[in-house]
Each structure stands twice: as structure tokens, then as C-alpha cells.
Amino acid sequence: MLENEPNNPRWYESFHLYCAHMALNVIFIVKDNNPFGATLIGRAYVPVHELLEGEEVDRWVEILDEDKNPICEGSKIHMKLQFFYFSRDRNWAHGIRSSEYPGVPYTYYAQRTGCLVSLYQDAHVPDKFIPTIPLIWRKEL
Image (cartoon, rainbow, N blue to C red; front, side, top):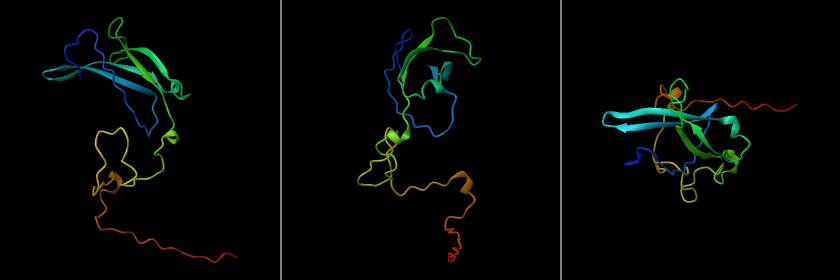
């Protein structure tokens, strides 16, 4: 959020975003802060297919309303985007090791020990449930 820059705001922010799902666009949502909450100004869309080659995309993107029409002439946001495959991340597939691995990089909250997560599909399972999985050994002929 910026203060005292109503005409030409500049954020100069940098993000590392990890994505684990399919998407058609990278969407930037621009809002105006007011006493009653944030008001949507518009959205800027960058098609994902433009990023998949791994080249940096550096350009101005028009800000659109909810119907994807320009909000007013000249309303744009400048962005630089670049896509990297997960395999290029130096921490990929190393697991979580308390002394060697500081946690997931570029996240807001630090890694903590002793936490418990119940996935939605497992919410009905009792806490101490350990399933019996029969192992059948067959002699190869």
C-alpha cells in the first residue's frame, strides 16, 4: 500500500510465486484504499503461455474493469515476469531438514516445528488412527 502517490504510484516490489496448479493468466489486482476497505480499481492480465519459454516479459499491461474493458485511457501497470521450472530451485527435493534447510523460501511465515495439518479430505479421520495395511508376499515363479 502506498501513501501520498495518487497519480503515479510506484511499488518497486519483487515476488517469488510458487504455483502448483494450472492457470490461464497471471492476474494483478489493483485496489484503492479507503476508510471502508479496499475498492477494486481493476485487474491486469498476462497470459501464462507468454511466460512458458522462460524469457523475461517486461512490459506495460492495461488495467481492465470486471468486464475486461479498459478502465480509462492510459491506465496501465508495468511489470517484469519470468517463469522458472521448479527443478531449477536449489532446495527442490531436499526435504525439510531443521539444521540444513531454513524452510520454504520467500514465504511470509517462518517454518515451525510441532505443527499439525489436517487436509480437508482427512478431516473425518480420528487423531490416533493408523490404518492396517496388509502386506502380501508372493514368491516369484
